[in-house]
Image (cartoon, rainbow, N blue to C red):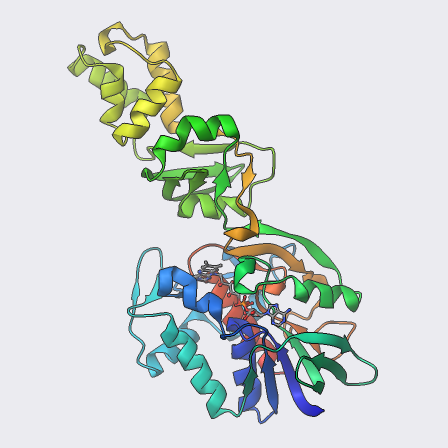
Length: 392
Ligand code: FDA
C-alpha cells in the first residue's frame, strides 16, 4: 500500500500540469496511466509538432453548457504563461496561422519539458498501470491498481476523452463521475471529419485530395479555413471546426469561393468570352476537378453565350452556397476531441473540485469544456491542470 497526498489518473497534458503544480507546493504526487508512454496525444498532435496554445485563446473559443466556466482557469494560467514556460526550456516555436503556436522541431520537446518538471518537483509517474478498484470509504480515496493499492487525499481525474481509442483513450473519467453521482453531458466526437452517404461518396471519391479555402456554416456559426475532400467525405480545418456544432441529420452551408460573387464572375466571363464553355469558366474559379464535378452533377453544359442567367445563378449557388448533408462523422476513431463530459455544474470553476465530493477533481478534456481547433484544447488542459494544482 502506498499513501500519497495526490493521485492523478492520466499522464496527459492536464494531468502532468496539475501534478507539477501540486509537486511545487510540496505535495507528494503519484501519476498513473495505463499507456506505455506518457502524453501520447501531445506526441501525435499538430502533425508531430504540437499546436500547444493559441495567441488568441479566450473563453469565446470553447463550447460548454456553461460558457463562463472556463473564464477563471483561463485567466489564471494564460497562453502567455505557457509560452513563458516553453521559452524557459528554449523550445523553438512559430505561429503557423490564426495565432496557432507550434514547436519548430518536435512535440516530444513539450513532453520532455513536462517530465523534467515532474522530476524536479518529485512527482512519480507510473506507466502501464491500470485501475482495478476505486472508492472513498472515508476522507481518503482508495484506488486499486495493477501494482498496488494507493490511498490519496486528493484524486484528480485527468483521463481525457475517448477519441483515438487505439492510443489508449477511454471514457473512464466519465465512469468515475457517474460512480460518484456527478452528471455527465453525453459525449460525442468533435473536431472530426464528415462522411457522405454511399451515393455521394461514390460520386465524389475522385475529388479526394482536392482542397479549397472555404467558409463553412451551420446556423449562425461559421468558420473560414481550408476544406479538404477525402475518400469518405469532407475534412480540413473548417470542417473539423464546424463538426463541433453540427447536429445529425442537418445541412451545412459551404461557400467554396468566399471572396468572389460567383454569379458576377460568371456573368463577366460570359461577356468577355461568350464562346467559352460554362465548365471552363467554372474551372477558372475553382480547382479543375471540383469545377468539372459541379458541372457534371448539375448537368451544366454548353457555351456561356447559350447559358441563361438563371443557369449561371444556379452554377453560382453551387459554388457560393453549396448545401451539403453529411450522413455522419468518422467518430472517435479520428476525432481530435470529445464534446461534452463531466458537467461543469458539478465542479468549482476555481478549483475544479467536485462540489459534492471533497478531494475529487476533474481537469482537461474529461470536463464539458471543448476548444476550437488551433491549440485551444491544450490551453484548456494547461489552465485547468494549473487551477487544480493549486488546491489538490
Ligand atoms: P489526454 O488524452 O492528453 O490524457 C489522458 C491520459 O489518460 C492518457 O495518457 C491516457 O492514456 C490516460 N488514460 C485514459 N484512460 C485511462 C484509464 N482507464 N486508466 C489509466 N489511464 C488512462 N489539441 C490542441 O490544442 N492542439 C493540437 O495540436 C491538437 N492536436 C491533436 C491531434 C490529435 C490526433 C488528437 C487526437 C488530439 C489533438 N488535440 C490537440 C487535442 C488534445 O490532444 C486533447 O485535448 C488533450 O490531449 C487533452 O488533454 P488531457 O490531459 O485532458 O487528456
